[in-house]
Image (cartoon, rainbow, N blue to C red; front, top):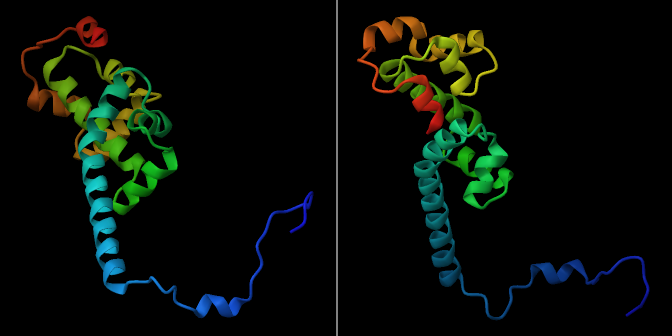
Length: 162
């Protein structure tokens, strides 16, 4: 033992790495490993249930960046990103789907303009919104609105107040 050293370390021969601890239990290890994997899968499923709602709320509050949403979940952004990758998606892809879903709802039930919807769904410009919408739906937001328009249930002021 040396006090005041520049690093703290324990050194041992690499041959000890080949020794199995006397209390090692392969059966228990197999069971615990499968339980941990199942818990990880369940965590990913729960995350996928919560995220669309949290992202929608974040969009309305202009706090929809990955770090904001991860904070809402009580986890680090990188942990959330890893869980999304494990679930076969990414935050960017999920955000895009939620934005388009929200835009469809706004197009159907509000009297908002395309530009207002672009801003409400977090796009920097209406042209970026239109491109993303067309890529997702194969039609323009204006065309979607014509095909799916209902009598406006909410005014622009009512939507922005919520």
